[in-house]
Image (cartoon, one colour):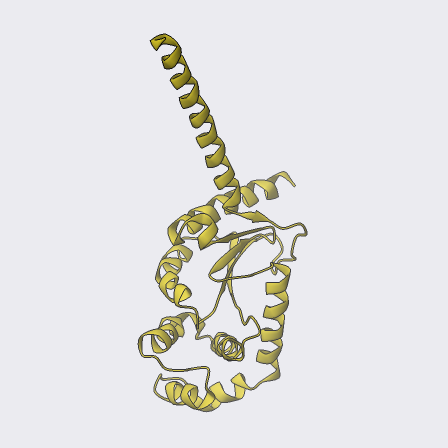
Length: 214
């Protein structure tokens, strides 16, 4: 009787072990999504990595320092770009214009942390143009150049383009990242910021291998 019970227990443990392994594999597969149609990338011959974000997103604010350190270690065959998301919110649309204005002025990388700090730490509503221009005046930027660029057709076109890119990648939340026009990963699907970057590293290696084979 004891022998039969022991055998049953071993069988049950084996089933649980198999189930656990299957669950682990399933979770691993769900860490990234593969797009049904490849999205065109900007630079031929390079592996494009995108961070979808918004200055208005507190999670993006928390992720930014870790992302910046990671991005500095990328190899030369990787083209890393940031795409601000609007989700058709007027406030986030204004912040997307802010990002592309800074980018056009060559200040996006230098001023990014300051923008996040102003919004999330100092509670400044930079989506309001009057508050934004006050912030610009105290940030060392050329106020006239900033204002002209902020209202330019070029910046408006980039915001519209960012909405198209977000739709192509089916972005539903931020921060989210994409690799080579094929794969997307979110912090929630990967299990956190550090895990997301590890997943992106693996997808970069995978894309690099795929390019060598083609």
